[in-house]
Every structure is written in C-alpha cells, then in structure tokens.
Image (cartoon, rainbow over all chains, first blue to last red):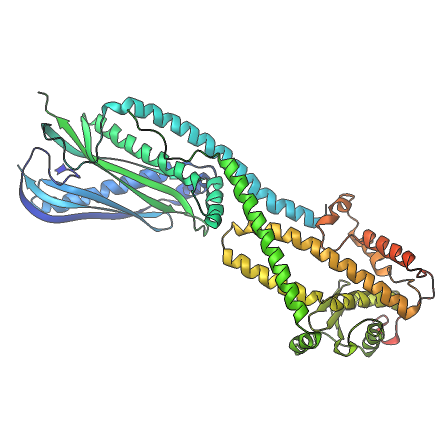
Length: 104
Length: 160
Length: 261
C-alpha cells in the first residue's frame, strides 16, 4: 500500500478514486505512566510515555485506514491528514484520513 | 514559632521552592535539548524538506512513503506559573514559545530521521500539527504538555 | 543552511518573572488602596442609624444579661453617639474574646466573663469594642472584605494569589491602627467612668502567658493583626501617664449577675 500526504503520487498517474478512508483509535496510558507525567510537570522535559502512546495510536489508526482502503481495492492512499485530540484524562484520540486511489 | 509566621512562610515557601526547582531543572533540560537539536539539524542538512505539494518537475521519483515524527514535551512548574501571570497582564508568553519551538524542531528531526532510515532523498509536503495534552491529574486547567506531529511524503529519486 | 533562530523571545525568564510579580503585586496594592478609599467614602456616607436599622434585624446571637447591658449603657454615655442602638450578648465559647459586629451589636464570650477579675477590666474590654463601633470599623472591615474578594474573584486564576498576598500584608497594618485607636478610646472611657484606670489593662496583661511560646514571637509581631499584648500594655501605660490618669485605685468588683457561673 503506497502512502503519501501529497495529492498525487509523484511519478504515478491515478487511475481510479475510491473515496475517503478513515482510521481512528482512542488510547489511554496506565496509571504508572501518568504519575511520571505528573512529576515531569514540575521539571519539564519530554513525556516519553505520551510520545510512545501517540506513536502507537497513530500506527493503529493508519492501519485501520489502510485496511479500509484495501477492502475497496485501492493500492494507494493519498492526501493523508491527521488529527489528535485529548479526550479525557490521560487519553488521546488519533484520527487519520485520506483518499483511497488506484495508481499505475 | 509564631504560628502565623510559620503559616506565611509555608504558604510562600512551598510554591517558591517548586518554582525554583522547575526553573533550574527546566532550563537545564531545555539547554541540553537545544544542543541536541542543533547538532542533529546540522547532520540532517542532507535531507531537504519542503512544504510544497508537488516536487520540482525535473525530479524523477521512483519510491514514495509517508514519514512522520512526533514528540510530547511537558511544561514545567516555572513555565506554567509565568504563563498564568502573563494571563493577567497580557503579552508574549516567552516560556511557551521555547516549548513549541523545541517540540516542532524535534518532530521535524524525527521525521527526517525516519526518511533517512528508509533510504529516501527528500521529504515533500511537510505538514505540522500541534495539540495540547490535558493535565492528567488534579484539576489543573493548564497543559500537561504540547504534542507536535510533523509528517510528509518521503521521496527516493531515481539514480540517473 | 538553517534559518535564523528567532522564534523564541530573548528576554531572560527570571527577569520576566520579576517584572510580572512586581507588576501584579503593585496592582494588588493599588486595588486595596482603591477599595479602602471606596469603603471609607461609603462608610462615612452611611449614617449610624441606618447601619443599625440594616443590621439590627439580625437576631441576638447569644444570651443577654441585664447587668452587662447596664454596664454597657453607663460606659457608652461617656462616648459620642447614641447609646440606645448598642446591644451586648454573651457568646458561649471557651476562649476569652470580644467582638463588635456591624449595627452596634457587641459580643463577649462566657470565658472572658469568667476570667475577668474586676468590673474595671470588663469595662475596658467593652470600651475597646465601643471604640470600634465609634470608628465604624466593623462596617469598614465588612465592606473592604467584600470589595477585595469581588475584585480578586474577577481577576481569577492562581496569579491572583500574588495580588492577594500583597493585599493581605497591607490589610494587616491597617487593622493594627484600628486596634490602637480602640485601645485609646477604651482607656479614656474607663478613666471617665471610674476616675482612674487601675485594672483596665489586666486582660491584656494576662494574654502574654497564653501566647508565650518562643522569643521569636516578639520578632514576628508585625505579622499579627493585634499588636503584641506587651506593646499594647506599654502604650496604655504611656497614655495614662500623658493624661495624668492614676493607675492606682479601688477596683470595682463584677456586678452580681456576671460573677462566676
């Protein structure tokens, strides 16, 4: 599955459009990592726990989007965009969407 | 000790201590992070980026892939306090400026590093998204941290 | 080539902190000053009779005793104002204390009555509260408290805590001024009623035993709303001397209804 956030796949022509495909997931960390974040809130620095959480969530959201594209018979997803939102304490929603297409 | 005096010392002393801790630890972390960022930016100059949607017309591209990099950076006590005071008076919240600058540059670097790992030559259509991570504990209205995501399309040029 | 690093303002964070804290502290003090002025104006404008009418409707907070009322009326006649609006009630509490509420209502705790050694001593305490009433202090305190909380509430957030601390420190010195004035008023009343001021400061002299914890308390007196009792007693002694009021004289025992139980 070819993935790109451009409107076209450079060097390839689009033969067919299948429409918008989406993937989303809501993930939460366990309590222990939250405590660490609380501590980090005093001294600053990267919240590695949260970073990992969001990376995994993004991967999962993309996988779901790709599955949707495959089910339509596409071989590429273009113009991919993301949206993150913090929905509850310690939980984040990750949303990925793009246009499923068939390219040469 | 006069109980009122003790209470006053306690009321001012604890936040003052946390402020000092936040400032010292925070600025140390920031300095070392910036050092790392500048070093890697130098090394990754060979991975050019653009936020144009199309690559230059003369490029012959043989492979593309989506690459991304992200980071979540936390606010420290000192920064948060400064931001609240600013909320009174208005003006530039310098403390958060540095936070977002660091997070953005770090995210872009991680995206470039992913492109390098995949053997690509450049990243086009770079987009940046930031979002606020809500504080997990207490009813702190402020931020626990800021998340920045950088993503783009990595391209591999055909070897002429 | 990397672009210029200009996305972070160059000011030093500590310098910024100092400026902001100072600025907000100043704003806090300014607010307190404005609130104080506003309340002064309002208090002066509001006639005593109207104040009594507004707050007089509040039900009696404690038991009354005719002997105590009589003493209050006798004292009040030596001072300015109309004694008829003044009332005193006994509050069932274990700590010796006395209060003046808006509207001319005085309160005296049961413990204070039990500990009083003479009528002169009780008279001084009542006189002190009458001093507050004459100075419209209870109304002033109420007004300022309301105004300051309103303003701080409007400003919102924890940043207001800086302003609040500054305002509180300013408030404390103002209250000490009121307390000294009330002491002076009380001593004058006692002198006029009994012809001497013996026994008047007995209540204050007894307080240091309770407060005596550490030598450090003496240094911390500026933080207290009530000037340290030693200082108050000393000031009263100086006042008595300057008016040539005798500190010796026969102490009148407590009236029958108030002694002991």
